[in-house]
Structure formats: C-alpha cells, structure tokens
Image (cartoon, rainbow, N blue to C red; front, side, top):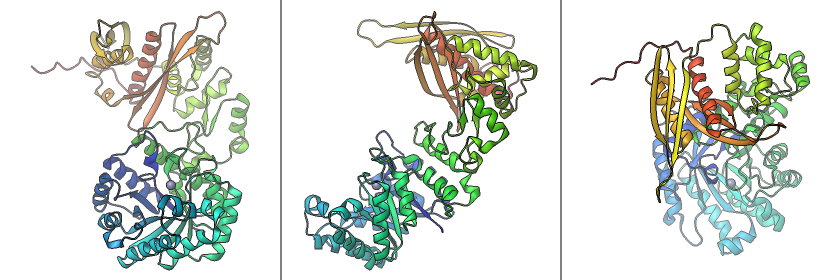
Length: 528
Ligand SMILES: [Zn+2]
C-alpha cells in the first residue's frame, strides 16, 4: 500500500531552537524534497510571517517535478466570517494548490484556550474547510491535540473530524501535538477513528516521549496512510517525527510503498543536505543515515562482516545510500586498515604494518582516529609510495595580547615551504587558532586557490589523561567542509596551539591530495 509523505520541515521544523531558514534555503530544501519524491511540502504559515508569503510567490515559478505545495494556517476565528479573517486571507493570497488547516479537537482547548463554545468550534472547522473547497483548493485538516482530546471526550474529538470531513477535507490528520502519547493507545485510537471516518487519515506525531517514530509506524499499521513529519526530526522542543527512519522502516521493514527504490538510496544524502542548509551538524548516530549507523569498531565484527555482511548489520546500508565503515582505533586489526585503504582507493601495500604501528604510537600520545577519518586518510596517503607533500609547514609564532580594557587580539606568523619557495605570512584572528588558520591560508591560497572553498565548521578540544605517565594533554578535533564533503582531523600535544596546528595541517593538506594536487610552479606575481 502507498503511504503519502507530508513534510513540514519548512514550517514545524523551523520551530526548533537555533534553526532558521532564509527564503533561499527553503527553496533549496523544497526542490530537494520534491526530487526525493515527498508528496506534500508545507512551505510555511503565510499569515504569521512575511518571509513565508515571499516563499509562496517564489515557489510558484520553481521547477517542481511532482510535490504539491501546502500553506498552513488555523481555522477562522470565533464569530468572524471566513472572508474577513486575516489569516485565511493570507492563505488565499499564497495561491497554493493545498491548504492545511489546523483546528482544535480537544474540548479543553476549546473551553480554556479558544474560550468559545464547542458548537462554534465545529462551525469554525466546517466553514473554513468549505471556504477553501469553494476556491478549489485541496484541504488537509490537522486535528490539533487529537489524542489528548480523545482521552477527555472521544465523542467531541470525533465530531471535530466529522465537521472537517463533511465539509470536504481530503485528509484528516491526527496530531499528537504535545508528543506525549505512546504507540499502543495511538494504535487503538486510530483503529476506532478508522471505523468511523471514511476520509483518508494521517498522523502528525511529536517526539516528546521519545517514541514519535514508533507512534507513526503504529498509526500506519492501524490505518493511517499519510505521515507528517520533518527531515532529521527537526521541530520544537524534542522535535517532530523524523521522516528519515519513518520512510526507511515503512519501506524496508513493513513493506509499504513510500519512495521508488532509486530515491530511497538518496535518503542519506538528503538528510545531510538538509542539515547543511540548516547549518546544523548531522547527527552521526542517526538511524540509517548517520555516519556511524553502519560503523564497526570491534575487530571481530569487522572480520565477520567481511565474510558475511548481514552478520552485524540490520539492513544493507546501500539501500539508504549509507555505507559500511570501519572505525579506526587501537583495537583495530590489520584488516581494518586494509578495508579503509581500499574504500579510499589507496593501496598501503608494504606500508600497512607501518601505518598500524604509527596509529598505535600516536594513540599512545593521545591522538584518536575514530573521530578523525581525515587524519587517518592522511596517514595512509603519507605512507603510500610516491607521496609528495603539497606543502611543508616549518615554523609558527602566535601572540595573544590583552591591553587595558581592549579585547584580546591574536596574531600568527607562519613559515612554510611550497615547492622550492619558502614563505612567511602573518595574519590576525579572533583567537590564536583562527589567526593560525588565516596565516596558513594566506600562504597557501595563491598556490592552491581551491583551498578558498574549504571551511572550518567545528573545533573541539578535549583533555586527555588516559595514559599513565603522561601529563594531561589537549586533543583538538577539527571538522572541515568543502561543499557537502566533510572530513575530521586530529592533533594532540601538551601545547594546545601545537595540537591545533597539527589538525589544521591535515585539514588543509587532505583536500589537495584528494584533488590530486601537483606541486605548483612559483605563485603568480600579483598585478601592480
Ligand atoms: Zn506539529
């Protein structure tokens, strides 16, 4: 059976603290979700936000393949005609093919929040749905607080659904607005509603009890055929239901049709793309699509998976566009190194034992490669025959200075060699690491302009004192990005600046080697 996806990342998703999307961002995400095969995309709430009104104007000219765009708003106010309700007028002006109306299904909210009569609330639902029906819009009715309302007064909660169904809504969506419901009651209530309402049903769960995905699956098994949620589970408080595992579970575990298999393989890419546009780090441990979702650390697992892939993984990661990964650590055996090298298209050959020894030595000094795949790749590349460093850092100086009431100023100078040329550069920065990064780039970008696209996206420091006999040492992990490509590098030293320097070095050398950098000739002389 086909399950319809309704994405509300652009509206409910942006309720997440710290998440904000520009109109441009929203357009990019909408186009990508359309490509993925999401059936309905909710663009926003035009009555509440002028930015959303602009989105609806721009999306009318966008080359969508199949998705239907929905605008969201609430039913008309009490004792107001639909024609005169500003929020409904904004929905009319949005000119979307679909209008999603949220209405109250809980008597508690009608009595105490809306402060109107229960009969008037039913008229508000019926009138508003009928209003958009007459304008030839498809109307989806979101029954707010439906499960809480059902617990208080099931007859009234059902009456709100009937008001929407009788007025011509194409979908009735049951919302677990406070996100506190559990799967068993959700399944029972959906079954009861299914027997009484003929209109197709949807589910809109929130994750406050940590079981939103389970609630969505239970609702589908009980008869809902639409799931409303967000990519990566973004949303207010603990988030909306995460459509990513919902899609994968429905399709791979429950045998429902959600997306064509070729599109299912884009799931990891889409999840990471939406995170990148939202400027959030993708959750490495997210089911199905996290970087660690199919990563194995133990040598026994790795040996078993090499023989029989399904022995330690619940599905083939390729089905959702993810990959099996071997985590590098002290416990890793030689096979791990070989598998990683092969995945990178490198042949450590006779260097394999040397790389393994080097990892052990560095880990003893406090380095850690599990979260630093970029530095691990650098170990392999530096050990590979024919390796030529695109540059060689020689010296650095960093000064941090605070005078009087001024803010701290940081300055760095670096000396490095590119080919036959030795260069000195200096730069200021917000802090010592930022100054070092700028000074390094200042020296390198004239030779390697592609480094201009490399961004530092995260900087983490941890104090390591796991090794007896060594003083506590800071370990720095840097995350860098170029487009959607990401890599992490590590440095460790008693001196935090040196630790950062080592991680920066790897982070800038790696993209050059991946590009197949050749040593450049002398830098072009700047004009003038
Ligand atoms: Zn919601």
